[in-house]
Length: 129
Image (cartoon, rainbow, N blue to C red; front, side, top):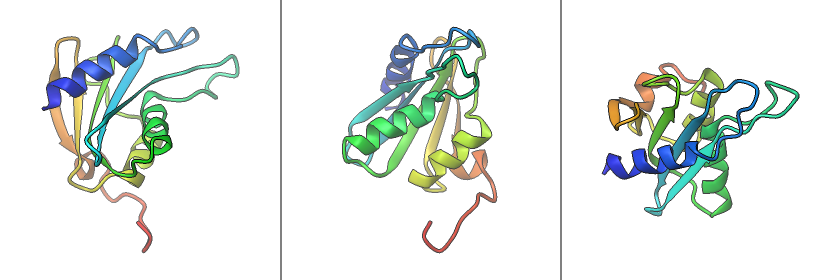
């Protein structure tokens, strides 16, 4: 099941707009509705004021009406097993559970699977979370 997320994340990475960092990233989310939502990093001249791939995918998911990340794959062209940055980890946790699987990929597939709890232990939470 994770292979289709890898393919979707790799496909999304092709749409990255990374002229400043030269570091394309793609992400794919399977939401609770069963659909896959993708995103790529989108930079602008006021670097680093762009969007990472993960929140771009989250935005697509939210705008389609889904609210929960069931699993997610992340791939970077120049760094195998590239994990989400710290800010993205908190953004992902807003829509994920502690058991949500996060797949870290290289150019051929999923190479490491982590849970959200492993990726972001002791995450910021309130009674709303």
